[in-house]
Image 1 (cartoon, helix red, strand yellow):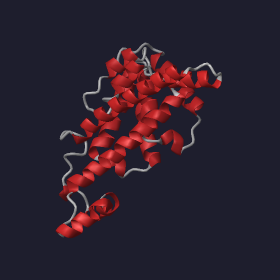
Image 2 (cartoon, rainbow, N blue to C red):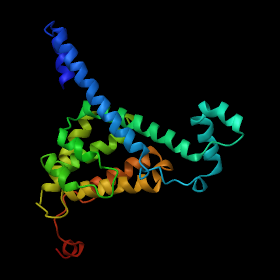
Image 3 (cartoon, rainbow, N blue to C red):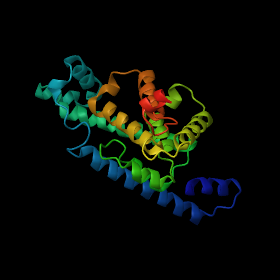
Length: 242
């Protein structure tokens, strides 16, 4: 927001050299902080890919990863006459995931305004311990809206299927209205957000995400988000009897 405001001031010829320098230094500081934080996360032994064992990965996949991500090690490897260690390949994949996520996080903010408190909670969206209540509080009772949009963006589904941002936002808002229709204390929008995040966690941690098509991933996230739409809070038997 600060940089965008500065751009407007530059267009109007109102920004001074001092303001320009101060804001650029601030932006650099923020980016450096993010870089340091993400770098530490990537080298953490508990990171999402750090426990991958080479034996669990098909040999043809290992060979492809080795040839793709470790070309720079070629000279050293030829000298040592040994194959690249899988750990180094894991680090290369982690770096790729980091860059991709940063790109998607930047692009998704163009379509939906993320409050800082929401961004803070969504940092843990890849964890089993994700706090959907904290997200709902940070978003002003819009947990489903932000989790659904965030996951569509992370999997690049909005771009892949060329879905207008306005249509996505309108759909999610209508979805939240339906979940709130009967003031259901359990099968409400928070429950839908919780289930949607859980589906994402399972896709990610089981590795299934690498074997499914974009349409299949979209279908799973979509199904999780809508599965209890306009739930009355009563049982199936109650509906049959009435």
